[in-house]
Amino acid sequence: MSGAKQPVRRIALFGKSCELWPVAALLAHELPDNIALVLVEDAVPVEPAAVTIRLDDPLLARLGVGAEELQKTNSAIFTLGCELRDWQHGDSRFFLAGSGTLPAVDDIAIHQIMLRAAELYDQRERLPYLYQPFRLPARALAAGKFAFQSPDPRSPLNMLRPTVQIDRAEYAAMCKQRVDRTQAKIVEARPQAVNMCTDSGTIRRISLDNGAVVDADFFIDLSGDLSRLTNDILNSDWTSIAGRLPFDRLVSASKAGPWCGDDNHVVARAIEGGLLISAPLRESNSVQLLYWSGLLTSEEAQALVGREGQESRLDPGYCGRPWNGNLVRLGSASACLGPFLSADMTMLHQQAVILADLLPTRTGMAVEARAFNRRQLTVVEQIRDFILLPFALNGRSDGPWSGFASQPMPDSLARKIDQFRSRGRFVAFEGEIFDEQSWIDLMIGFGVVPRRVDPMARSLDMTTMPRRLKNLTSAFDRALAALPLNRDVPARPGFEPFT
Image 1 (cartoon, rainbow, N blue to C red):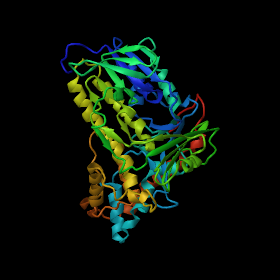
Image 2: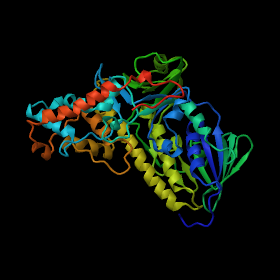
Image 3: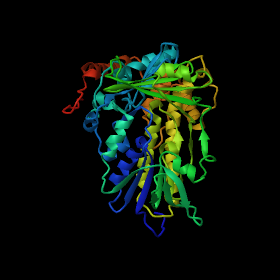
Image 4: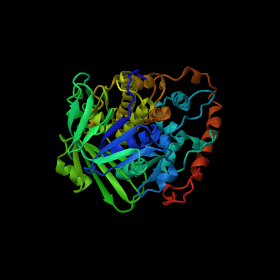
């Protein structure tokens, strides 16, 4: 606590439904009953889109939302990851699945052993091929199969990290239902003017475009509208990644009707001028196109997505200090990382959990603000690095893809790649959002072959390795063969999670 005198008794949140309600649901669940919430929802419809959320997402865990509740929605589909199509060349396919750590052999990582084997035959470039049989979650995804994670740490299925694909508007509505109306006042409006305290620089009250006034001790901006009215430091605090992710337009559309394709997972397909993301849902298909207006016209983009597509501008980047005074910015008010791998929703969930950890508090929250800014910046940089990794390593020769490799990477990402390329090690820090195994899989799959083998791997008796590794891959093969197809996941309540 900061030691200020007055406790926070009233918190006001402002934003569009897709960002407002997940945060409101968490705060309503976590905060004591004596703190009132004022929820000011911008009623303007948001662009149609699907979001992908891991079932072990910390916000879902805090709310107690599990597979059974998600299954009752009209749109949810469970899967194991995302397919990156045509990122290396015209017909490449890479299946990116969340994964627990691979079992080690004599405390030596599998990829180090396979690198040693490839080196013995002077075929280091074959590392991705040799390593592939050990990527059980990715193999299950590629085969169109599915299972929920096994709680048994000895089971190969413990490696699975299932996700849910769900319509963004329906997910917001589900979160809204979890907000206790007796604790929260809900208003449909947008902020119009801000009344500031001249001595402290904090917000006193907000005037809305419906004539109402909102008084609160603490304000949360989820859309950016409130921040723009305060003339704060948003612009000077903005770190742009437009040069590293040079897409400046987004077109979103939803096509009604049951999904009839072969793939139940998200497909992110690299095309000349952009990235086409298709996410099948139970009763529709969400399509989003990230593109560079220097290579594709708006008309060409609409032709790829559909004439019903809604277009918006993109300015990829983030602010480093979103909490100032008694105003904190979350979601699109604080950053734009885009829809690839549902980066923006992942970021919002992480920010909400960090904020909930710091509330309730008192007015004059300098200590809490510093803690939030530090922790959320770590989150944003982790998500930024992970989504930039395949762009930086892509093998295409057309624009704008061919220019990604020449762009300077963030120091933290360059360090991760250099460390792995040098000695096959990935240094994970506390609170990593993405599994260490996912980083390793992605780097190997996109052609990063370590120059040096782990010295411990050189001490192994490689004549015994084929038998020992065969035992492991056989266990994976049996687990994979026993999995049901994804399309056999029951479509309605009464479903029984299978492992």
